[in-house]
Length: 236
Image 1: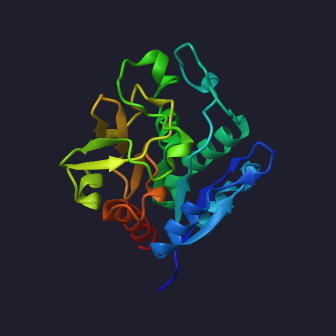
Image 2: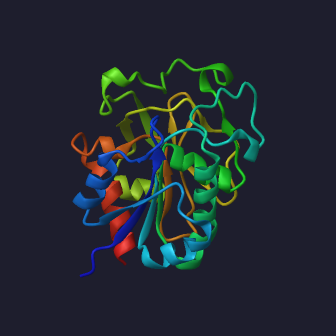
């Protein structure tokens, strides 16, 4: 059986080079896929050729989306904005349906999905949303630190994949989905009401989660199940 090739979008380091957390690649490999890094400067005119070769697409975490591309609420307080990355990922999402590619968005990736579909974001949770939860966990706690619990909608594709009504997750974001984009259903919430996952049920696999399951593969089987379902969709 063919090993599905999964494109993973890169972010950029402070030194100016493309980078990707090894956890994404390891999670794809463990689920039976082959990861392929998609650099930020990938030529837009070659996107169809890329998608024709891929079996699935993972939009990874990273910096904030340029607030000029959606109706953003002040104060912006955006970090590590890379307009060229926004442009590439939006173009990939625009063309992906033509190739019937399964799509998984993680953290920033979920936000990209939402904004691409016409949604908006809280650009700074602490100043725009009253909550007692800490969504931006201090890095010294580690990437596997379980920050809070999310509730999964029972009738969702995500619930079928995870097999859980509630799930403890990590949390490393200061922005979150506000207005939800076209044809997206909210399928998970944090206890304070913030959106934690979306999906498009009209597509074979089109899921975005706000947490980082790639860092929780050793913590709970549900986080592994998400990658397994994604790679299986790519394989089919």
